[in-house]
Length: 261
Figure 1: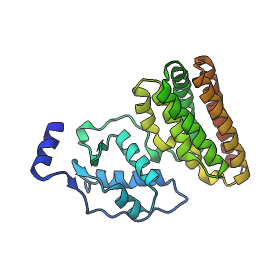
Figure 2: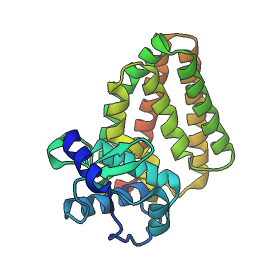
Figure 3: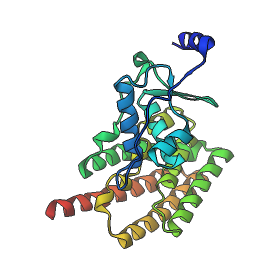
Figure 4: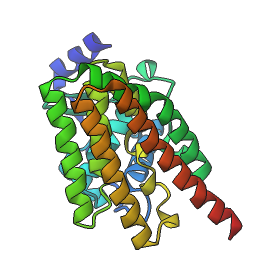
């Protein structure tokens, strides 16, 4: 596939698609998931063809009315689905259908709190071990990334933000610290869906309750980071399991309250 693509570019350069125009996205939808859905629809309908280059970040930001972070998370999710491939310094291109992966978690699947709980169960199994491996294998650069992510999350919480991007980066940093390239690849299948509070936003209108929860998450992140920094793999596993179990229990309570209404 690579050879064929290279030959095509040699004749006329990559095909930069100018023919699609995305209407602005409107909150309170999950903006990343919605942008993924729309771009996926363009690809599957054939309006974006294999080898076509996606619009630039700036163009997608302008057309969809979203931030650079949303655009980058959407492209990351499309890459995890096998729908696009990225080239450093060049852009994102529609992948050949024959090369598309079959195992993925589609953002459109995350429609209920029951779905969220199932993903958290999967995360408990995977991320508990990732935390332990990170404690055993982290180097100075990996540890610096974990600590920076924990600090950024704490600052965002103190500023009253939802801290979704910072939360995602903390978990990405731990996966990277395992030294096992398959862990970050697995995380790409979840992408921004890893952080459930943006998926179930309609259920979380109580700002005080959310602030209390995020404050607790900040403490849990600190405990995980401390264990990893100390090389305590067993404690890192315990801290990560405790963190994710608390998240699962919280959303289970929210689900029960929603059913009882």
